Length: 176
Image 1: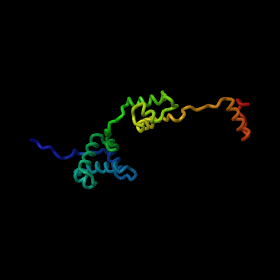
Image 2: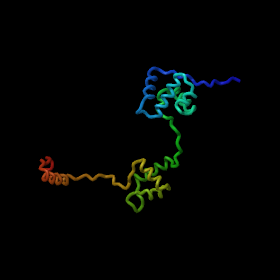
Image 3: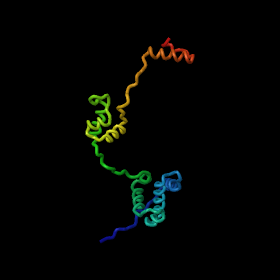
């Protein structure tokens, strides 16, 4: 039976990567996690063992191994962002969310002028808080009027005349 080597893969840096890592490692206005990752990779490139890096930087050995592997796979871009995490599964299906949005935009509740969170929740079988979150995410405000009432031409001219009399401004040609 052959024993596997416990030595980490060597890290070889290009001059551009070295200068970028040096900048990040010394940065005072850079995120602390990026500074730490840069220090890990710089020390690893110098041939320092993972256990020693972990002790010097006060992190765990698996953390050092994680960032070594991430750097070998993705280089500098792998250090800049954390890996995406799955998060929890949504409890409300996309179809149900779409139904709430469609109902809000295209229907009116019986005996009312607009939907409230309570009436929509009752109609869709959801909680009031869920409806509120859906409306907020889609920027829906059914309690506000969505139309802007334009002034008619004669109203505009009368308004301009009153402004002219107060401010002594020359009247627009169309309103004379």
